[in-house]
Length: 161
Image 1 (cartoon, rainbow, N blue to C red):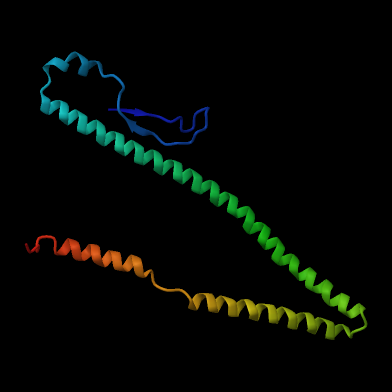
Image 2: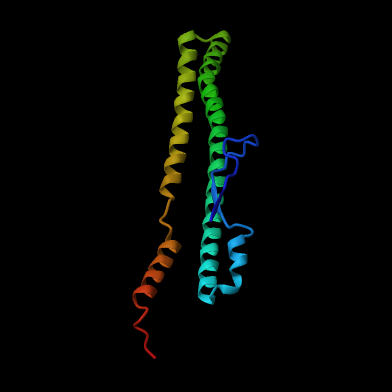
């Protein structure tokens, strides 16, 4: 059995790990093909099939891991943007309070109005969150099918004709 390298760290930069593979042609197997028994051929076929399945699983795992890493790196940019927006909202509310104060209200009263508005918005979103959390339920269909599967497996030999 040979190892195929996917150029991890090589010039093409694919970044995939080494994956076991089946040789395309084995000179020893071709030379001794007439001398091998059926059992030995079945054993070789089984070994090659097993290697093929393992290679496919490893390839899938490496591709999924690579995509997940790219997704995580992309989400970091969204987190940074959200953080900047949240910190910038302070200046928005400060400007809103100053605007209200410029319209003729006492400055402390303008800031109190903005603070009350912020508390009102926070309360509304808290209540919406509580309502959404209360609507959560257990996955009843999944629980039911798991119980059915477990019952079928435990009573597998108890069939009555």
